[in-house]
Image 1 (cartoon, one colour):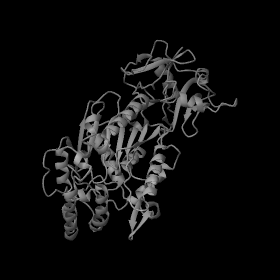
Image 2 (cartoon, rainbow, N blue to C red):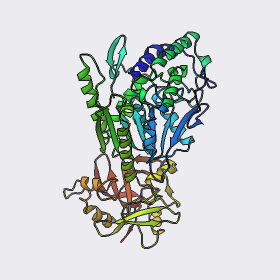
Image 3 (cartoon, rainbow, N blue to C red):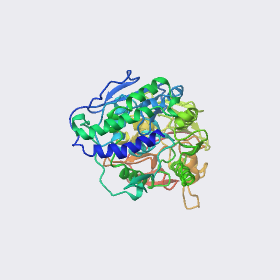
Amino acid sequence: MMQRDVRLLLQVLAWAALLMLLQATAIQAQNESSPPFSPPGKLVDVGGWRLHINCTGETRVGQPTVILEPGIGDFSVEWSLVQPGVAKFARVCSYDRAGDGWSDWGPHPRTFRQIVYELHTLLDKAGVKPPLVLVGQSYGGWLVRLYAFTYPSDVVGMVLVDAGADDPRRMNNGKLARSSELVKGAPIPAVKTSGPLRVSDIPPEALRQMKAGAQSLVPKANDSPRDKLPPEAQRMRTWALGQIGHIAAGVNPFEIEELAVLRAEGAKSENPFGDKPLIVLTRGIPEENGPDGEALEAEHRRNHAAVAKTSRQGKLIIATRSGHHIHIDEPELVIQSISDVVDAADKAFVPVNAISERKGDVLKDKEGNLYTAKTMLDGKRWMTQNLNIELTNSYCYDDKQAICHRFGRLYTWEAAKKACDMLGDGWRLPTEDEWREMAKQYGGVRDDSGRTGKQAYEALLVGGNSEFNALLGGNRDSDGKYFRLDAHGFYWSATEHGIGEAWFLNFGRGSQALYLQNDGEKPSAWSVRCIRP
């Protein structure tokens, strides 16, 4: 089992060696030899070191781009059986983490947060824009989950391929222990934006050990199941695993602390990934041996079942013909899972400037943005996408255009009225009574009559059976600070309440309820849907 061999080498050999390093500074390290052939993608500078990214397939307006994150010790060629299939229906990118494959060495230590920062920077500089569907295999599963926690507005779905356990076992003084038992509360180093590791930083004895360790991996580079990979992929693996950069690429003395951070993030709510589509693939062929093998496999399955529940749209699928490397043993299952998540995310997050293929009318604003509309059960025509027309006192969340692309703009009350009027043809901001009546058709807002607001929340939220597709776009306070993205969706009504306030609809993810409230401060900026009676 190649990944286990790699991890053992990284822990026993590379840890001891690289902990002797001086602080990383200055310029890029060079491998001892050149790759056997040119990279299929391109090398992108992310701050003094270059990462290789290979994107294939057509870019489709509004459709998520798929990002492939491999396991420990692996790189882009690992996805050779998956990427061509995904490229038939989506834009898809594989890449090499710093030090592996065709990529330059990066700063050390190679913490989760360092890698996530580098991937985010790589995508930005390579022109790969959100929304994203992330696919993580084994160790890569930790990375994509951290990415989704760090950049929640960029990620619309995930596929986890026999991902790493939440609380894995690790060797400690010759004994196996849970990672949670080894947490010391040590501070995790800040992300480094410059200063990639260089060979001259490595003491001679450490360098000798790293070279020996790398060469010991070469004979096993294409052991089963990697003997199923295309010949060119195997050839590249044989070269790459023999490079000292391959050893350096996996050294993270802070893994235990970072796993604790991941567990803490996941424990903040029952469904930390909300309604984002999530498929968790788990192996069907056992890989744990020994007297505890059966119990460990059962625990492995329970852990993946729990991870699937981190999204209300989560699903666990057993790869009955696969061991740990499902993407090699059953690439067709991984491809289908990615397709299912892309489709679900595509339907759930229709971009505000793309033509929807759903049933209903299409209207255009003065900037050329297109929106779908639908006659709801109250008999009135409502926009089923958030307004995104730019005018004074309208904003993109965190001042990021990519978030506007997904969630629409946030408007003050006065700007909201004006924006709907600008659509012409009788479109306007809905009143409090119109919001109440429409919501009533789907279960009603939470009120004193006993309605919980849950039924309407689920029906009207994105992906619900009403096809209204409300989004949790957060808000901008009057002081210019942004809050509650992916937690609340606030929608203005045209009905005032006293001086300086107005009624609004509130989709609350935490309580899973829909509220109609009257204390909306007009200088605050919220989402907008328009109505044409």
